[in-house]
Length: 287
Image (cartoon, rainbow, N blue to C red; front, side, top):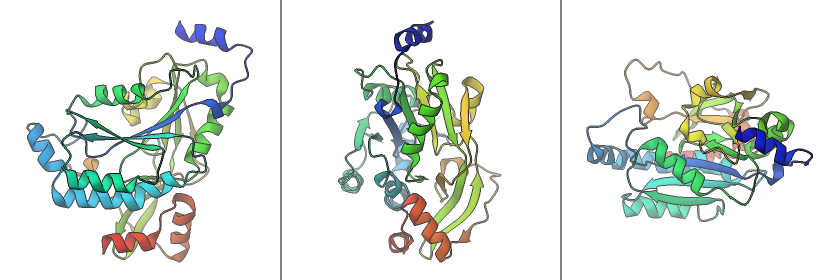
């Protein structure tokens, strides 16, 4: 097996997770063929839904105030962040998106034509892997309305170091941080509730062998423990799951509502420390 060959090559070597490439991927209103829980009749209908002014305004505001702050404030800045967009994104939205990441050297916009969801995401990630590094990569997925803790990349590397024996014996290993919050931005501030979400789509990573072509985007996040070994941590708050009117997962009927409460001063300070979310910025953006 390929992993046995890999083990033979690295046997006796001292592997350091600091040398591993960390690569994250975010789909920002990308008009994929498939990949949505709510389907549309054709690609034109999907584009019309995705680029509707009300929806795009909310997505851009959430990306700027919820998703980007924690990414920009990572304690380990050595990572790549790919933002996959449609090559048909209207120019005004594209320009706003570019302006938001101008001060984030890790971020790169990747424009793609509408393609099959899993295939194009696999292509994007593998196309940006550093082939000169014969080490596992650390990959994570990220939605444009979610947040990760400021030490997420640092923790992923630490887990990889602690689990090096497991990681170098497998094609892929899931790394799950399952404790955080569900939250909704508003003109009054951030409404939230503590959330325990194992194998959810945020603060979820994967160590991938250098010869393995599959990526974190090839698997449904909830199915990771069915197809690979995983390690999971619940010791600190590691994510904010964005809650808004355009969540793809909340567009279907019979979705259970979530009870949210407005953060008090202590809660706002915690969100600033853990996720770099500034509730004053949120209030300004959503007023």
